[in-house]
Length: 153
Image 1 (cartoon, rainbow, N blue to C red):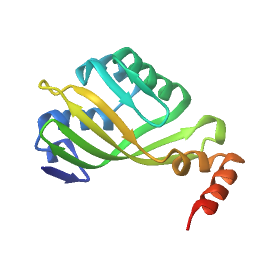
Image 2 (cartoon, one colour):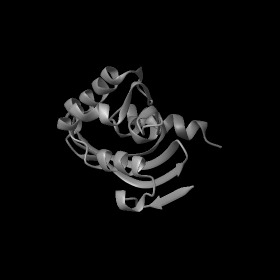
Image 3 (cartoon, rainbow, N blue to C red):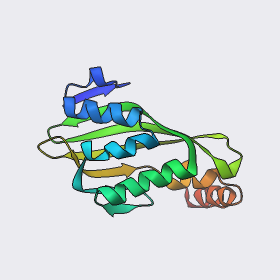
Image 4 (cartoon, rainbow, N blue to C red):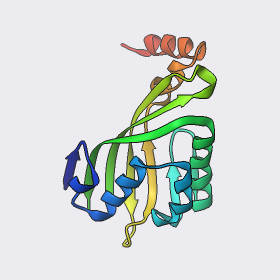
């Protein structure tokens, strides 16, 4: 197992994962044309809002991200690699155009499974939509914080 805190591509022993991390850290709308270099044709992508299969559907998810958010970027914090899979801890930084354009951060992680050629076959994102997003939205945030207090021990 290889764990690289504050990972950079040069710190990650597996060159397949190093390339994926470098791509995500520099990811821009222009890079959508390169998505087939990183995802298998029939890859599955799942996060709290999407569950899609295939490069075209995954591209659409990322395209939507670039269309609705300003300055979205991933900051990779941790990488754990074991054979054909890896776990990547990240901060997703962005600005919401509709909510005052203030900087936002979502902390989460991705579990990736790779095929023999190093392409992503499964990409599953884990992050708390309630805490990381909903609680930051006026009115809805007040309700979510109230619900969290009511549900806590």
